[in-house]
Image (cartoon, rainbow, N blue to C red):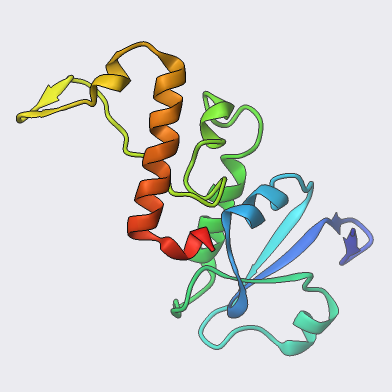
Length: 155
Protein backbone atom coordinates (compact mmCIF):
# COMPACT_ATOMS: atom_id res chain seq x y z
CA UNK A 1 0.00 0.00 0.00
CA UNK A 2 1.46 3.35 -1.00
CA UNK A 3 0.77 6.23 1.35
CA UNK A 4 1.07 9.80 0.13
CA UNK A 5 2.27 12.40 2.65
CA UNK A 6 2.68 15.20 0.13
CA UNK A 7 2.47 15.77 -3.59
CA UNK A 8 6.13 14.79 -4.01
CA UNK A 9 6.50 11.45 -2.19
CA UNK A 10 4.75 8.17 -1.65
CA UNK A 11 5.81 5.51 0.83
CA UNK A 12 5.38 1.75 0.94
CA UNK A 13 5.59 1.97 4.73
CA UNK A 14 5.58 4.72 7.33
CA UNK A 15 7.02 3.20 10.48
CA UNK A 16 6.75 4.76 13.90
CA UNK A 17 9.22 3.36 16.46
CA UNK A 18 7.37 3.00 19.76
CA UNK A 19 7.47 0.72 22.82
CA UNK A 20 3.77 -0.07 22.32
CA UNK A 21 4.25 -1.26 18.74
CA UNK A 22 4.43 -4.75 17.30
CA UNK A 23 7.64 -6.56 18.24
CA UNK A 24 10.27 -6.47 15.46
CA UNK A 25 11.27 -9.90 14.14
CA UNK A 26 13.46 -11.38 11.44
CA UNK A 27 10.31 -12.20 9.50
CA UNK A 28 9.33 -8.52 9.56
CA UNK A 29 12.83 -7.55 8.37
CA UNK A 30 12.45 -10.03 5.50
CA UNK A 31 9.09 -8.52 4.52
CA UNK A 32 10.26 -4.90 4.74
CA UNK A 33 13.36 -5.70 2.66
CA UNK A 34 10.98 -6.27 -0.26
CA UNK A 35 9.41 -2.81 0.03
CA UNK A 36 10.54 0.23 -1.90
CA UNK A 37 10.30 3.56 -0.12
CA UNK A 38 10.19 3.40 3.69
CA UNK A 39 10.21 6.24 6.17
CA UNK A 40 10.77 5.87 9.92
CA UNK A 41 9.49 8.35 12.47
CA UNK A 42 11.45 8.64 15.70
CA UNK A 43 9.65 10.09 18.67
CA UNK A 44 11.51 11.62 21.58
CA UNK A 45 10.70 11.32 25.26
CA UNK A 46 6.92 10.69 25.27
CA UNK A 47 6.43 10.10 21.54
CA UNK A 48 4.63 11.92 18.74
CA UNK A 49 1.21 13.49 18.32
CA UNK A 50 -1.51 10.83 18.13
CA UNK A 51 -3.02 12.54 15.07
CA UNK A 52 0.15 11.83 13.08
CA UNK A 53 -0.12 8.19 14.13
CA UNK A 54 -3.78 8.08 13.14
CA UNK A 55 -3.36 9.83 9.79
CA UNK A 56 -0.13 8.51 8.34
CA UNK A 57 1.62 5.78 10.29
CA UNK A 58 1.16 2.38 8.64
CA UNK A 59 3.26 0.30 11.06
CA UNK A 60 4.08 0.79 14.74
CA UNK A 61 7.19 -1.17 15.70
CA UNK A 62 8.96 -1.95 18.99
CA UNK A 63 12.43 -3.46 19.27
CA UNK A 64 11.79 -4.78 22.77
CA UNK A 65 10.20 -4.32 26.15
CA UNK A 66 12.21 -1.30 27.26
CA UNK A 67 12.21 2.45 26.67
CA UNK A 68 14.88 4.52 24.94
CA UNK A 69 15.25 8.32 25.02
CA UNK A 70 14.29 8.48 21.36
CA UNK A 71 13.57 6.27 18.39
CA UNK A 72 16.86 6.88 16.59
CA UNK A 73 18.62 3.79 17.93
CA UNK A 74 15.58 1.65 17.15
CA UNK A 75 15.54 3.09 13.62
CA UNK A 76 19.21 2.14 13.22
CA UNK A 77 18.38 -1.42 14.35
CA UNK A 78 15.55 -1.71 11.82
CA UNK A 79 17.65 -0.16 9.06
CA UNK A 80 20.54 -2.58 9.59
CA UNK A 81 18.29 -5.64 9.77
CA UNK A 82 16.51 -4.61 6.55
CA UNK A 83 19.41 -3.28 4.47
CA UNK A 84 21.61 -6.36 5.04
CA UNK A 85 18.95 -8.38 3.19
CA UNK A 86 19.07 -6.25 0.05
CA UNK A 87 20.87 -7.73 -2.95
CA UNK A 88 24.52 -6.73 -3.11
CA UNK A 89 24.84 -5.60 0.52
CA UNK A 90 26.31 -8.83 1.90
CA UNK A 91 29.21 -10.44 0.10
CA UNK A 92 27.32 -13.75 0.05
CA UNK A 93 23.53 -13.38 0.03
CA UNK A 94 23.20 -17.09 0.80
CA UNK A 95 24.77 -16.49 4.22
CA UNK A 96 21.77 -14.38 5.29
CA UNK A 97 19.53 -17.38 4.72
CA UNK A 98 21.33 -19.32 7.45
CA UNK A 99 21.24 -16.54 10.04
CA UNK A 100 19.45 -16.96 13.34
CA UNK A 101 15.66 -16.68 13.13
CA UNK A 102 15.44 -17.20 9.35
CA UNK A 103 13.93 -20.64 9.93
CA UNK A 104 12.76 -20.10 13.55
CA UNK A 105 16.06 -21.50 14.82
CA UNK A 106 19.19 -20.00 16.27
CA UNK A 107 22.28 -20.34 14.11
CA UNK A 108 24.68 -23.21 14.86
CA UNK A 109 28.07 -22.52 16.48
CA UNK A 110 30.64 -20.78 14.28
CA UNK A 111 34.26 -21.89 14.03
CA UNK A 112 37.15 -20.14 12.28
CA UNK A 113 40.91 -20.62 12.08
CA UNK A 114 43.05 -21.94 13.61
CA UNK A 115 41.78 -25.51 13.77
CA UNK A 116 42.83 -25.64 17.43
CA UNK A 117 42.75 -22.73 19.86
CA UNK A 118 43.80 -23.05 23.51
CA UNK A 119 43.18 -26.79 23.41
CA UNK A 120 39.73 -26.47 21.81
CA UNK A 121 39.36 -28.01 18.36
CA UNK A 122 37.02 -27.36 15.48
CA UNK A 123 34.64 -30.35 15.24
CA UNK A 124 36.06 -32.96 12.85
CA UNK A 125 32.96 -32.99 10.65
CA UNK A 126 33.56 -29.32 9.79
CA UNK A 127 37.07 -30.16 8.63
CA UNK A 128 35.98 -33.22 6.62
CA UNK A 129 35.01 -31.54 3.36
CA UNK A 130 31.81 -33.65 3.37
CA UNK A 131 29.28 -30.90 2.64
CA UNK A 132 26.24 -33.09 3.27
CA UNK A 133 27.60 -34.14 6.69
CA UNK A 134 28.43 -30.49 7.47
CA UNK A 135 24.90 -29.42 6.52
CA UNK A 136 23.41 -32.15 8.74
CA UNK A 137 25.70 -31.15 11.63
CA UNK A 138 24.70 -27.47 11.24
CA UNK A 139 20.99 -28.37 11.26
CA UNK A 140 21.35 -30.59 14.33
CA UNK A 141 23.40 -28.00 16.20
CA UNK A 142 20.90 -25.24 15.34
CA UNK A 143 18.06 -27.33 16.78
CA UNK A 144 20.12 -28.25 19.86
CA UNK A 145 21.14 -24.62 20.49
CA UNK A 146 17.57 -23.40 20.04
CA UNK A 147 16.20 -26.03 22.46
CA UNK A 148 18.80 -25.02 25.06
CA UNK A 149 18.70 -21.24 24.70
CA UNK A 150 15.36 -20.26 23.14
CA UNK A 151 12.85 -23.14 23.35
CA UNK A 152 10.07 -20.58 22.83
CA UNK A 153 11.10 -20.38 19.14
CA UNK A 154 10.20 -24.04 18.59
CA UNK A 155 6.53 -23.60 19.48
